[in-house]
Length: 307
Image 1 (tube, rainbow, N blue to C red):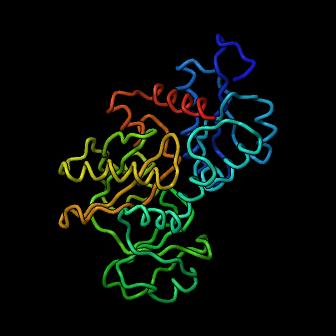
Image 2: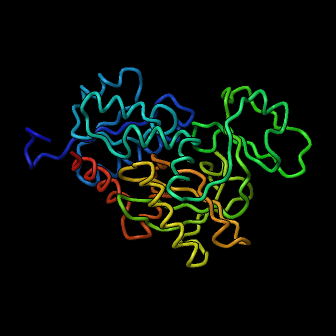
Image 3: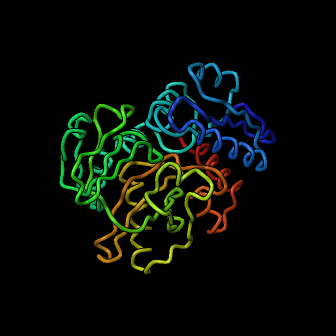
């Protein structure tokens, strides 16, 4: 912010859209953040990020970029690397944390080394996964580097045939042991966990359950034992730190209540959680007393204060 009057509202460029499979979700997140940041007093430029992003940023000349991109390029370290190269401050995690979190296999390794619970998994050729069971059912097949439950296949116990993956699936996929139980999630803001939400659906928490009206119901605080709540809060902060995340992240869990604490496992960390007022992380912030404009304001100020 050098050279700007202290009386001038900081200029924030909100990045949204982009080329990933999660473009529409990102456009929604970005628009809601832009509205909230205007309410918080910032001067806002909304940018639908494309190939001319460096020129778009040069024209906007922001004090900070609010990264509301989702999926590949926007949250895998690519756009973060571009902004580092341009010398632009930006919100959320940096290059390494973003790349690690998007690469599910490497993220799992980081969690294991931090003593956090994860299921067994392997990386396999999609062609082989279509031909045979590469691990005993039940298991899950998913892209190793996509988000928002894009391309998730569940192979249940007793399944005779391997999954017939879509041609849109990448050539290499992650196959992991199926984790039964309840869907829990915890957002981390800086160095503190905000709470635990249970996500209730009629089936798998897939793309439609996440984003279509009525696809899921959020219970906050989750009706779970105090020991499990405490573990979710602890694990989420440790997972955030293990990847080197900054600002806001969200850690997703599965909990098999029949196994108690041993039944709680980390699925993944999202470094660019959905950012509409009814998204999971903003809901937890609101439950802890921070409304949506205040949350967006905190995220921007945290980025502005970085060296």
